[in-house]
Length: 296
Image (cartoon, rainbow, N blue to C red):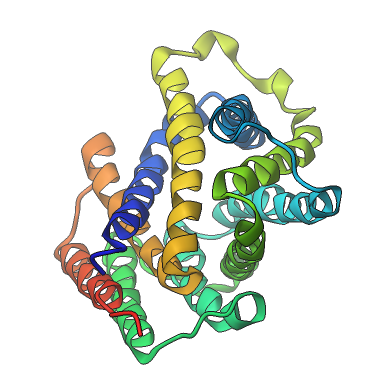
């Protein structure tokens, strides 16, 4: 645990950044259509990522045969996944989307990890993950909106559950490439392809933007998404995930709903319920249990 402490802290930091973004993004989505906002997030991050890659590693190249893999990862992990997130929120409740998006993701990552990487799932990881899963369920269901299995929400529920499966496979698919290239190089290239595939989807959306309503708050939300949620967070996540393992790392996503609940209270005066506080403590206990496992 001690040797990997910085990487576990990195995973927690990223999850908090992503959790806060649930609140921050609301300000930008009041002006920008969702498709445009997602494209701005990743498209504006690209120059920064390529410059950072060139500055730190001296080149930006990858082998031609790997470009196809990176293009497919970008299409699935950025383009398809982000569009699915938007539609899951549209066709189901926020509580349903949050629970089905977040909770099964690490479980799928643990189940499918042996197909991509040589990573053993221990009993400690499983028990700690189940404890953290109980905590994240308490946070999401402990709010004012409960889980709703009404038939009108089933399409959105299926999309949200698919996000967990596809997202886990996306994370795992990057791991073999990060054995060959740095996490920064892999991140830069799959975001490039993901943004490239996103652009055509935005073509009929730019005319709907009310440019006169843009404010410093709106641009601040865009900047937070570009710098913190994309450039910093994805690179730090991939570096940390490479170090501690995909299965363990993905359980740290359970900090996201906890951070989102805190952001809602700070920015939008949304109440935090007792069950959510208890859930946060349970998550911390489960993840500390995972993180303190000694290497064999």
